[in-house]
Length: 384
Image 1 (tube, helix red, strand yellow):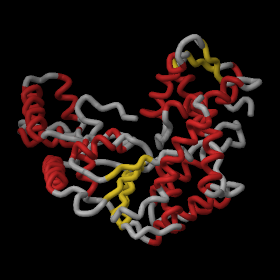
Image 2 (cartoon, rainbow, N blue to C red; image 1 turned 180 degrees about the vertical axis):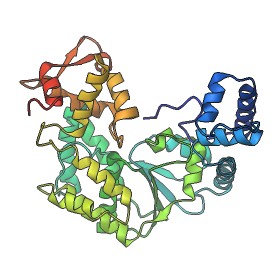
Image 3 (spheres, rainbow, N blue to C red; image 1 turned 90 degrees about the vertical axis):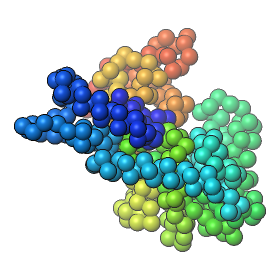
Image 4 (spheres, rainbow, N blue to C red; image 1 turned 120 degrees about the vertical axis):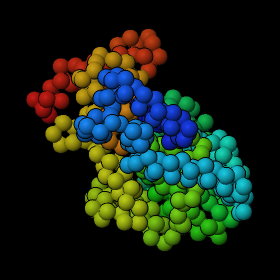
């Protein structure tokens, strides 16, 4: 998943200093020629004044458009990126036998590109959807495989085989001196992180365990996930990794226990604590709770946002609806497109559907969504 970049910024976090200098000079030239667009850009950040514009002024504008408070801050960040890449290229993770653990394969190539040489483990059971129980790994895999086969349309045996690779790898960590967990701030990542911390606490490893936990990146207007970042940014994030110590392991254990409890109260209590060991986990768990059906409408937040998108922009395709959700409506993007399609089904196939799906002869991303009268009524709170 990736965010929609502004024409004057980047969604992958990598900046070229010479390019930004040229943009500042071009903006100054355009402003001196009284080009309306250039003047409008300047007035968004500098109030009208009598003194002539200088290059330092347009450099300030460029820095602000890139998400930095000043030109020196932008320059310093670019230099830090360059320094981090050189350091990783020189040494990277080669000082210790390292395993990088991620809830997907989206950064594996970038880690290799920037110079990391350790092993990579994808553990990607999407705990943000479907049933969770306090079970042994083998029993949990069986439960999850049955559900995920329904979501994906794959054979249950194939899903189970895929899950087994990740779960089995967690029992084979002894040859590593360092484990690095790469996770962002959404509920997809944080629920998986909670499980991994729970497993590491229940079965300690001799390896040093470190965490790269990311919820924002300088210069990225809408950070959604590590997979959207340029390889250099992973080298820069490497320097910010933190040791996983007892409070974080305890938090992960409490989170997993709350997620597998019979009701929502343990999870609500944990969210209310603020989860000081990792505040982003508490925010992700709070967002996860919002998927529970609301008393007024019976809708989870994703369902309600989907109806709002179709109301505001429809009829429109499933793929475009998902794009709007990720780019504009979802406060903490976490869904993959296949999970989104699964979540749509009850809205369209119930006895009183809220959505109408047409053009069903096409692949599902191209099918059109429109609100039914019932859907409009639920959104307007005329009917609960």
